[in-house]
Length: 298
Image 1 (cartoon, rainbow, N blue to C red):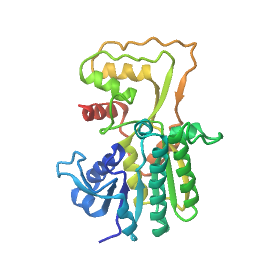
Image 2: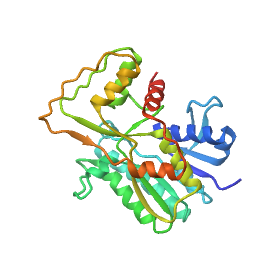
Image 3: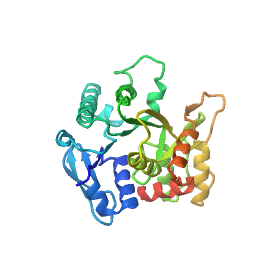
Image 4: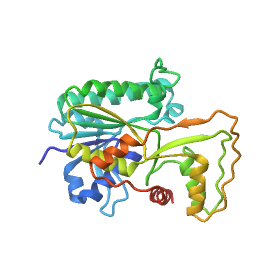
């Protein structure tokens, strides 16, 4: 068997998208022969394939893999888990996952690693770490530092995600985009609840995963690459208006106070789109992203 690609976090939103995109690009047989999917425990992962679920191994199985060709690392506890399991357990569990990945890379020298980080880490750039006050962002920065060091002997690419669209988007209560699209699916008018201007940069997860697989197959020279994963930047009011037009809904309800300080969580779209061009990946346009995301929610 050729050396496999390793995909961690395969049961999450980004992981299921990665499986979907690989199968769409290369077929069901290639996915199941080329990719070792890893999750928190051995399980079947349903990623919407007409060919059925894929078997994932537990993350501990990484210790037995010494012939990997490359790694897409998506295993990371999401921000909302802090409230669920508590700060101390969150820190301990997250660092244990990172340590397992670092040990795996030690046993597979020089293979490329590609991983998403978060715009939350960018917020801490130039500031002191705040492990207990902001554990998610601080631990993301800790991982970035490890992969930066790892880039001395391999391509280590980190993509900071600010906001995202895609077919496996999570609970509508967590994100404005999924809340808006849930309302659209129900034929209800959209309400922008924030009174201050809110700006977000979005990446389509499917497009990003196609780029990740392309980077594994044709990696850049050894070194550390950090890119903001950003395809579209717009305000929540603009987003609500676009969705309302696409779904034939009334004008969204909003009351923005321009005197309030804006909530800006955004990044330059140029570098990410330049990488898409380099690897000849056509990004899904915004209406397509919105329809795909809405279909996933439905």
